[in-house]
Length: 284
Ligand SMILES: Cc1cc2nc3c(=O)[nH]c(=O)nc-3n(C[C@H](O)[C@H](O)[C@H](O)COP(=O)(O)OP(=O)(O)OC[C@H]3O[C@@H](n4cnc5c(N)ncnc54)[C@H](O)[C@@H]3O)c2cc1C
Image (cartoon, rainbow, N blue to C red):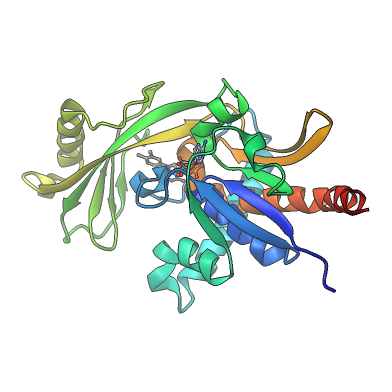
């Protein structure tokens, strides 16, 4: 009889959770993966992001690691952009995951121990949710607001020196940004901020003056001095729950998500012999 699959729960259905889940499925076929998340696209931080590949600095994370993760992500996306799947790349994460046999569950996890018994390991990609779920007070939001406008004549990316003002053309809309407000948890767009964005972008690109705004969007960058990508074994009443953390991508999640997914998957792989041990003992 084939060995039962190792049941893995990934908490968080944003860019980081889905890419990590997909990487685990592709690299560790002995695992069955379920993504449990309070929200999925189009209600994640990545749906607001400009999504530009640009190095973002994490002061508490060794620079060589950041460079590796950026390069791995760049290479992965470059390959995708040159493949026949390029046109669907934006929606590939969820469909790619489901088509590979992954499961999705929409719900909030209030206590990580609720997953014990059903799952053998947990991968935490809950971003700001890690504050309540794992008591991590060092993660905080940096609110970002963008405008989606109808300006099909804009074909080039324009960004000012400090990156506070940018104009990024996408497939169907152009994104204008932006703002950065530390510790602001509000997901409600601010009218003054929108006015400021339009004003600054028109200054950079005068053809945008009078452009029609389709939508104002807000996202909270899950920020931390260092990314947290590490393994942990939680212990309660003599029970163990292996957890891999992968969160704190702040304003650079797009730029490193594939590299960090690979790292989290490798950490899970290192835990598998331990999980097997517990398995075997509990079945004796
Ligand atoms: C305006 C803006 C512009 C940006 N521009 C760029 C850019 O140009 N380039 C770049 O690289 N990055 C950019 N980013 C950053 C990037 O978007 C983020 O780093 C990335 O989206 C974070 O992804 P995540 O999956 O970690 O977080 P999230 O998308 O926030 O996902 C976390 C998920 O966890 C779920 N969750 C949380 N707690 C629980 C719980 N208890 N139970 C169940 N589910 C839970 C949530 O529902 C959510 O689905 C930008 C961000 C913003 C806001």
